[in-house]
Length: 113
Length: 114
Image (cartoon, rainbow over all chains, first blue to last red; front, side, top):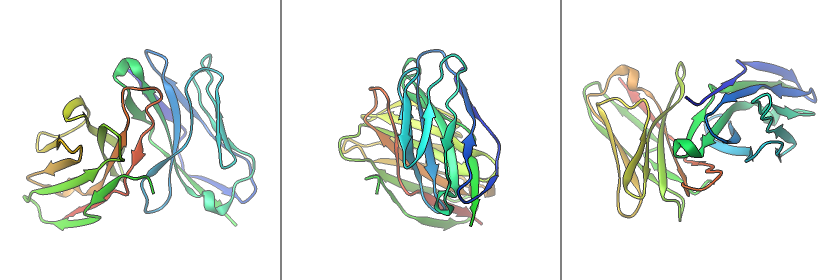
């Protein structure tokens, strides 16, 4: 079945450091891929998405590229800020699975000033 | 603001009781999803409704049930509550049936079972 695996947290970085959160997936079809972010005390919100191989999603300085050959969708940001402290979820939506969305376990990011 | 509303924001109740959580999807979204988020279990998919009909089921206990009404709002009913049911319950909505099917989440209902 479909699944998403992302790196365990927490990840602790200093402000302006480079961020990578790894995400790999398995899917029977051609899924769309997402990164959602959950700030403290809030619901999840979509950060970025990619719908086909080699697409790059980007938003707020974050980027992720849909790599079909490595079944990966790693999240990157060149310079993190304290305000980026949150939990990040990688997810996939597979049309062959009725567009059911599968979420990874989440990775908590702490950014220190 | 995602456009998805959930009530109540907080709920405190006792073991054995029954509660109802309510969700109103974004205008135009036909699909509603329910998730449970606890510290040790992460985000667990419970159930999905599309235009009033159940479309997909996840790890939903038999003590839990849901429905989507003609006006598209949804309710999640939790009965015979146990301490372990304490969690955040999120509702999300999407257009559904179309790529990429991104979901829009409500602010959640925090349930505490004492």
